[in-house]
Amino acid sequence: LDIRGKLAQVRGVFQSLLNATIEVYGEHDARLLPTAVKLFEMSMRLNNLEAANVQQQMVQRLRESSTPATMQWYHPPQGEMRVVKHIELLATHVELGRYYLATKQYEKARSELQQVAAWRENVRQL
Image 1 (cartoon, rainbow, N blue to C red):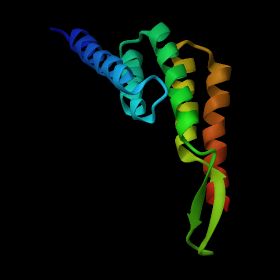
Image 2: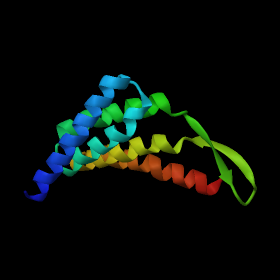
Image 3: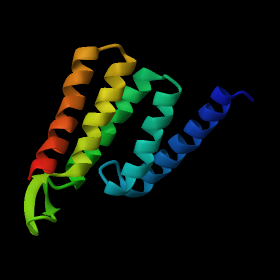
Image 4: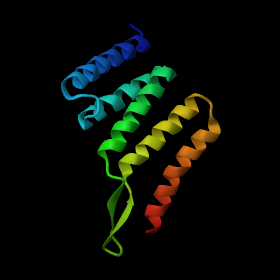
């Protein structure tokens, strides 16, 4: 098999694993998130953008329902904790940026990736 065939097999394994997990825990359980992220990654690697779009929406829904909006960020020089947007939620912006780059929607991709850069700059300046 060529590399695309092997990736398609791996994607099929992740899809069946995700389906079995949904069957056991339901479609709103946080335990689906790691498998859903891997399935999204496989779709992006195979350039299956329609499937990647659906899976990215599922990952975003799972992430937003199971992750708090903010988190404590330890700032060593001052030794204090600051409240910032949760780092897990930034993964959604990275995934959307990658998806928009693959679909050649460069302005949307830039907008998503700039949000990540702004978060990093904000944390650096705290």
